[in-house]
Amino acid sequence: MAGKDDEYDYLFKVVLIGDSGVGKSNLLSRFTRNEFNLESKSTIGVEFATRSIKVDQKTIKAQIWDTAGQERYRAITSAYYRGAVGALLVYDIAKHLTYENVERWLKELRDHADSNIVIMLVGNKSDLRHLRAVPTEEAKAFAELHGLSFIETSALDSTNVEQAFTNILTEIHRIVSQKALANEQAGVQVPRNVETITVAPTTTNNRDQKGDSGCC
Image (tube, rainbow, N blue to C red; front, side, top):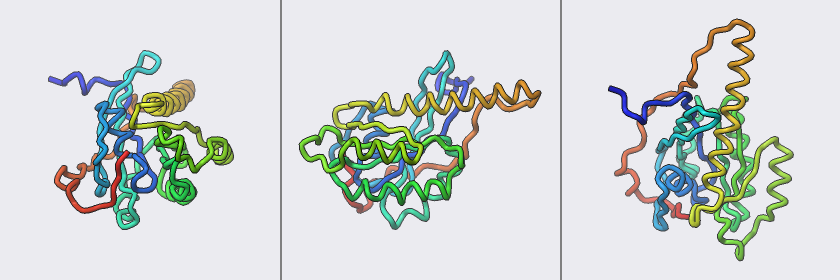
């Protein structure tokens, strides 16, 4: 018998990308488990977690993938963009280099992901306002230039984390619903759910491997 977790109207795969240490793993754990770990290690390879939310009376199950930010794992993670319908491109507002690298990550995303993927630029660690190195207006202008939505978050104190994921999932649902309606009007039969590829996540043991600090 199917469990409650298996009852959903849509299944959307969303990837988290950005430099190591910008807080991707803690954004994932804060949204899916409401947890934060100051001593979290860098992600090795790819891990994912799920959470369901309600959008327009529909149950949306988000399958959120946390990709390793280190250069040496980029060849491994590039394959995991396949099937993603949304992406959160994360940088650290207190480290300008992570923001400078956003353009490179965006290019990689455009190269490997579907051309219609919904992308949100996320300035994480907004709690470090006293150490801010990336002006909000500058990042907002970059997002506007490249057709991205934009938000600043803090996985540490939960600021805008829920809103970031809800906003991108709502936008994906809006696009999928519009396509489904257009196909229906054209007499084309389409599956109700957005299917994703199934790849086994990295085991917990891999978390113990040596890596740069990926906290906050």
